[in-house]
Length: 70
Image (cartoon, rainbow, N blue to C red; front, side, top):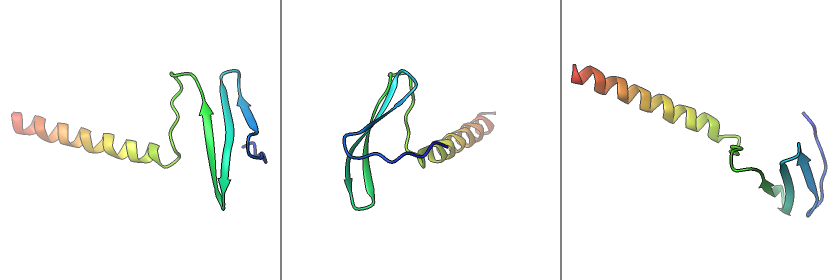
């Protein structure tokens, strides 16, 4: 993991197509702006687990519906 210190307005480039900009800071909260191509998926850290849980729930509902249809 790369750890950097940045001031408001400073940027970090990730590869040739992604730029992260520090937009502001208030207390211990940092506001970031991320510029990336449309095909790059950007999610908050806690969302992948949430999305995975929803996917699992939907699969279980689908299996239950298949059993009822038989």
